[in-house]
Every structure is written in structure tokens, then in C-alpha cells.
Amino acid sequence: MDPLHSADVDAPQGEELAEITNGIVRLFAEYYGRGPTRAKTYLLDETYVVTVLRDTMTTVEHTLAQGGHGEQVRSVRLTFQEAMADSFKGVVEQALGRPVAAYHSQLLIDADIGFEMFVLEES
Figure 1 (cartoon, one colour):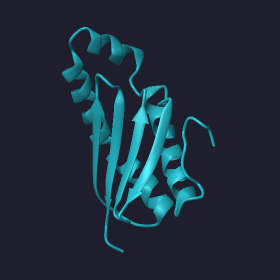
Figure 2: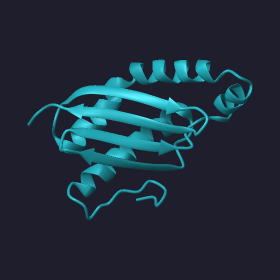
Figure 3: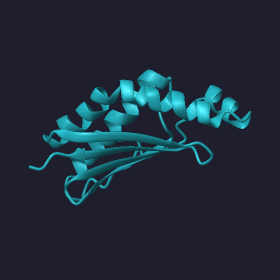
């Protein structure tokens, strides 16, 4: 695994969380032309999966944000994430063997930090 895309493989479900991180990074690289420089996935209360992604924005997105168009960048990014929801949910479902009940994506423009959040169906 790439050290920039870390996961606690010794932690419970560590290998599955690493699989989620790597899968989401692959989707970013494939559809945005580049992946984040750092990423890590967390499992909370056996129900919530959160992947934190750093340095995800493209050069075009940075340029637009610096020119005062951060809301447009966020809007386009979140619209695209909604269109790709099944692919993102599929990464989590395959890794954990549980259906995803809900998915949400968020991007903090100034900090260039993204969050992919999933709620798992009860087992």
C-alpha cells in the first residue's frame, strides 16, 4: 500500500479499511485525473465509514477557487460525486460485505480536504 494512503492494517477490519481507501483513491484518480495525496478510512461504531482525503482538487479547481469561485467548484464536485454514488458505495460494500444505506460527500475548499461518508445498513 502507498504510505500516503494509510490505514491501520493491524486494527480490527484494517485490511478492509485499506481496501476502501485504495478503492476510493482509485476512483478519484480515474475520474479526476489524479488522486489525493493522503487518504485514510475510519469505521465508527460498526456503522459509519468516513474516508478523509487531502489535496484532492485539480489545478483547474484550485485556480477557480483562488479566483473567488469556490462555491462553483464545490457544486460541480458534489454533483459529480452524486452521479458516482453507486461506484463509491460499491467500494465500501465490497470491502465490508455490508450494504450502504446512505452516502454523502463533502469538500472543504480552503483546506482542500474531502470527506466521503457512508452509513452502513444494520447487520
